[in-house]
Length: 410
Picture 1: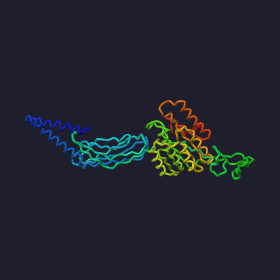
Picture 2: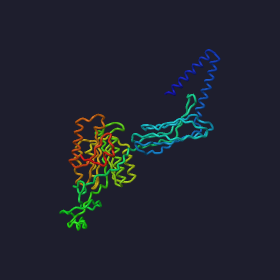
Picture 3: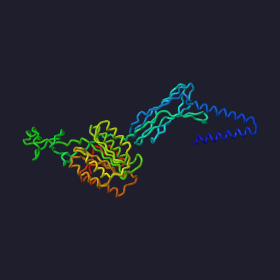
């Protein structure tokens, strides 16, 4: 619109000058008409050949990256013409929250300009970086010429992944009743120590050297082996999340899910995930780099737009849980009905861990008594069913909140 208005004003002035010259017959006005015509024709020709011999392209160096990291793109413009290009503007149209910065460069005759453009990524998602647009014009800015080169590039911004050096899954209750440590009938390599024999202990668990040393029977005591597989249930019901933009509770939930998943995969354990967004998406247990990429792509694009209650999601997930697994639920729900659905896990030999996000802390105002009471009630229900949980509030250090050295129970 600005260029059109400029041309319209220029046309009006030229027309007025021509009319005045022919109306008055003044030689100076005819000189101005000829001079204006020559300038316009020269400017048009200059702009028309401004991109002659110009070759340009760009390459995104890291099209798959994480929130908080820097997206980098390398640009290259070549001038094969025998005349230099005083100014050439290069930029991309994109759907990124903050686009890569454009640049105006001068290119000498038969010369090359190359530069690296950077932008810090603040929001996860899948974005499109358009083809490279190159524009130049005449020195007076009356005319311009433009060309589009290259192909659009897709950029995927994965959620932030927080290192969890002290993270460890809670052990699954293999025998259905064990809480944290048990003298197992099943074989396990995790020997914690010895204790005196009691009625009912298996004979093959007797530690004969200790028995001889103490003069009475002693048996080996075992720690439970950590669950082999992890199943993450990410609650994306819109009613259990609050906040906007990068400071929303759903961003914290996605970061936690990504961090736990990658930490567990790094331990060579299988990870599965259920994300209850607008459409429930389920990834079956698997391990390796391929699974890591699948989960990261899923978490890069999910939003808190679901309408499935957590109790419904858990009930649908329970039949898929195998003995020895651990179910990790990430939610901001304070509806206690879903807690009751976890009661059957222990009997099935499935461990459980709940990452409870304090939704009220993301609203931006001090939580009222009702919100505090609901949060306290769901924490009490989890403790009543002996389900370990971690509480995460807005502004908390995620690594410390869910995987710190000190892990408090409700």
